[in-house]
Image (cartoon, rainbow, N blue to C red; front, side, top):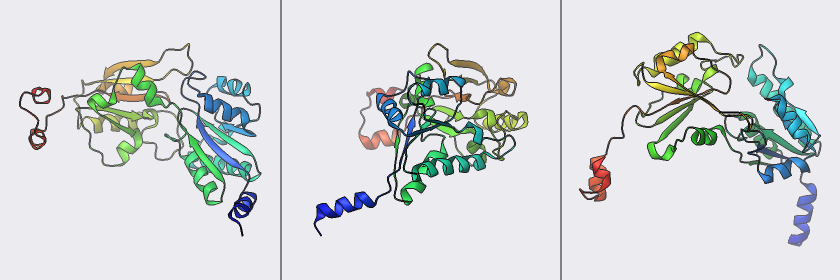
Length: 278
């Protein structure tokens, strides 16, 4: 059979529905790429999470065929159950032959397991599924706080995973803990801070930092007319601070970077080089 005819048959037999997971950015509207806007407009269905009451109105102007996933969250129910229901809804829409877009806050692949899982399952079923990058919260953080993560080094952890697993911190660089408000929530049911869990986090961080070490509570601006939050306070006062779902804990360096003289010797770095003077 000719190769061209075989290719045509393959395309004919392939499932017609497809999924694109894209990022809306953090600050509504101003961080949406032209590619993402075009994909939103061309979709048969757009799934999204109404994390703000502005979002649905914004998306409605681009494509009115919206499916809000927020109702899948139920009080007292594990978020893992909600995620599975969301994934099933998206997969069903694709299997019905639709060009589906899953529009996610920030970057669709960061701190967002369901889009990854939906793509994995659809690909196994033979459907086209891809992910388009979006501006994530860390990009906003670096800009708002004037931090270059390359200059000092930067470690990033989801706050609960930082507690659940054995991690070692490099206190000569920045440490960023995401979703600090729900740290320690192993039930995946709570969306509000637990003072006892916050106390455990503080106690754990005191293995590396003194109580008076200044940390930053950061929140990116959801709208261009709003200001970001950058509240500085001692680590010991974290339990008394207001923590929201989008609050990120930023821990600045405690110490200067230590020169690795043995490696500099192996590299042949001259004695008068700037690296030797730090």
